[in-house]
Length: 98
Image (tube, helix red, strand yellow):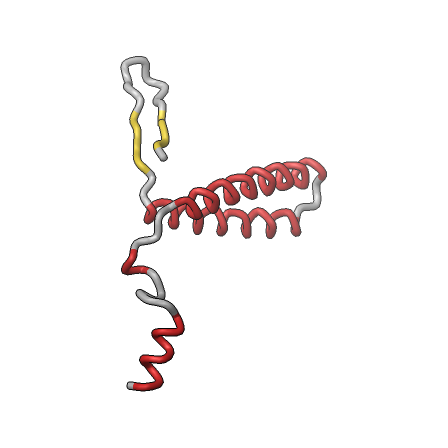
């Protein structure tokens, strides 16, 4: 997935960056932390405007988190990162009989 950033300077050209699995994982973690912070702020808010602000922030962060996790699910899993190279039964049998 590519993200397009635009600058407000008249002569500036758009800059594209590619989201790699590492950046995606980092984005998910940062979004999760921001969501926890927004929930903490909501719990401590006393003014009506601040409560509304935290509600909108939480909704936006939940949608961002959902989108990022759906992107992560679509990422291919590398063979070396799988838990078992073969079936789990073969791993258990070879462990027991070795």
